[in-house]
Image (tube, rainbow, N blue to C red; front, side, top):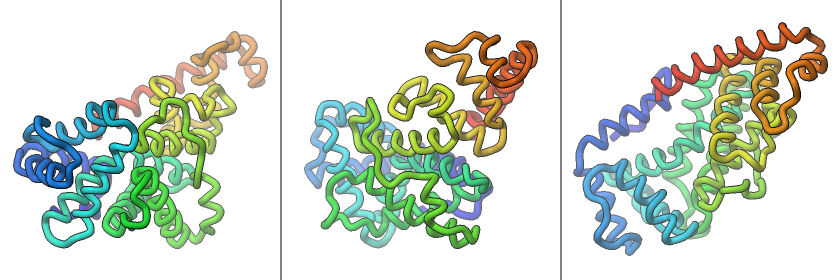
Length: 291
């Protein structure tokens, strides 16, 4: 299986390819066999499709085995990915799919600098493939998910700096090196994803309008992710984001007070929020359809 490249929307292309891969039970059985051989899982486990196996590894088994379990199964696949041939490509592809949500959030953070989302996604996914293939498993066997995302960030930032003629340090200000684990981040994959979302939210100014970076789980996290992407793709501006978040957060001010602070009339404030919600709803539907 070839790495996806030269596509207008690499995220959509990867998800389409993944759906095609999951239509056959052969790859799922092969990956499951590797994990059994490595002593990571034992029968009975799920049969067949790759997507069912990945969900099993990330949710059901992870809950019973604890946060360190992801290091076991990711480590087993990384050992395979370091080789050559079709099996190495398959192991790499499964790991890339597992880390894809984190890659999307990293893309949102880098796109905040004004770079097109699709182009940044292409660069981030390419970096993720490289990091998976050359990951130093012997020297870094722990916190694999977080390390994969952070190494991908380092590589993507350097490449983006070269392409845009910005300094790496300037781009580094928009995505973080290390952060405390946000609330609800028990698994390393979740930790890495929430850390990146918290950084993107802070860079987008959401911490100023009702989205504290340590409370980005559940519905709050989903809303923050939508708003970060809406800003990155210029669906909304900061005024539109503020109109939405100020209205729906806990302890929201009255419309009259919010309008006064913004220096506009009550009617203008309500119209601003209505337009922002409409734009966000339309774009969200398009993003879901493309996913």
